[in-house]
Amino acid sequence: MDPKKLFHDTRLDGTCVYCGAFPDTRDHVPSKVLLDEPFPLALPVVPCCKTCNNSFSFDELYIACFIECVIHGTTDPEKMSRTKIKRILNERPRLRETIEKNKKQNDQNLIWTPDKTKVNTIVVKLARGHAAYELSEPQMSDPEYIRIAPYGTLSEEELTNFENSPNQSLWPEIGSRAFVNSVVANNINFENGWNIIQDSTYRYMISHDDGICVKIVMSEYLFCEVIFS
Image (tube, rainbow, N blue to C red):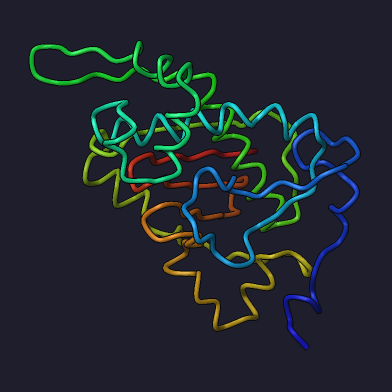
């Protein structure tokens, strides 16, 4: 029997992992807008309510498009390398305008100013989803710590510390995904502590020491760390 089925934890099936309400839908973590087609098989899915799911939709579109625009230095859809983002920017001119008006050119560089509320909302949402999925421990309270840093703003030492898996003895609860990962030796999507959802597009890491720490990297550009006490 597949050990992932044998040890599947169903206790979260009756609770929205974001607010605790009754879950009348399910949510991919990460959202498919942050990934490219063809999508990886067996994407992480968590139970959630329609209210939470709908409330995150536009902010997820925003952060996906914003990252791509910053990487390419333009909001011109035809300059985007991701087909999905090109389509979204063409179909949603107001979203493109919102991103465009928050960039400016100084003497040497193009400066992009993100909507911090939208970015923080989605990063924390993703962290909550990963914590619930991997550890069977939903995090409803506000995080103790959030850091969101674009590539190039981290020093070499900071980047090394971020990339390394913490030296810890993780004893995951039986039934949690972390436990399943520990007993399934051939988890091909797990590398150096990182769960690789899609190469160069999305990866995350969970550690459980003095609280739950979730690290997320989007498009190898945005480095995020969220800690729940």
